[in-house]
Amino acid sequence: MRLNIAIDGPVGAGKSSIADAAAARLGILHLDTGAMYRALGLKTLREGVDPAQEDAVVSLCQGLNLAVQVGEKGQRTLLDGEDVSSQIRTPEVSMAASTVSRYAQVRKHMVALQQQLAAAQDMIVDGRDICTTVLPQAPLKIYLTASSEERARRRWKEMQEKGEPDTFEEVLAQVIARDEQDMHRPVEPLRQAEDATLLDSTNLTFDQVVDQIVKMAEAVRNGD
Image (tube, rainbow, N blue to C red; front, side, top):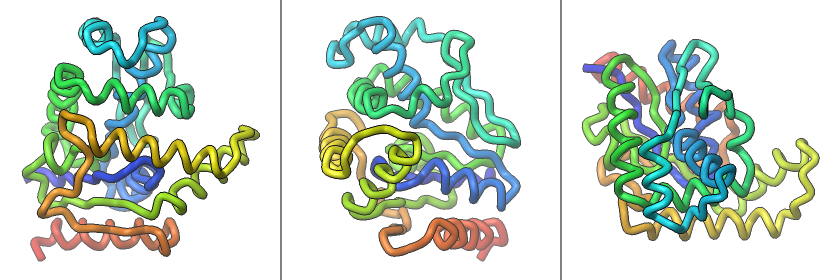
């Protein structure tokens, strides 16, 4: 059986960076599925397509030139041949990604690609419906979360370091809005799978979270 580790959780929980670190420790790869939806969100903004117009978004998705390169140094997301790994991390793209990810045909297309990648090799896969939809048979499932205030604080700190002017209150409002949208979308809403381990990182350091995930993964690997 492949060592597929499925991690779900809300925006700002640190899934991607934590999965990167845990995958490096375990000697396996990491697939950031959220980056795939973000790439589509970025495409809608660049093409002037309203993310709320489902038919237009589905049409755009069907012709999407999206590639995910997973290597030893992590994932690169390519849109129309361009590496957009940094461009897809803005708040505007984040909200667009949350909107386009609600559509059944979009999710069907993305999930098929994600399953194909995970079947080929051991990897950590993170997103919002990995445990429930993409890899329901994964031997290790984790729901990674933190309080909305703590997630907003972490994101606000990152933005301050980049020189972005948003206030903490604005970032907190964005986090709450994103949670509301992700948890109440009609297609595969964000939720904790019944057999997923809850990992609340509110009062944990980054390294402590990584340590816990690695410990759980090694137990699965050793058949414990």
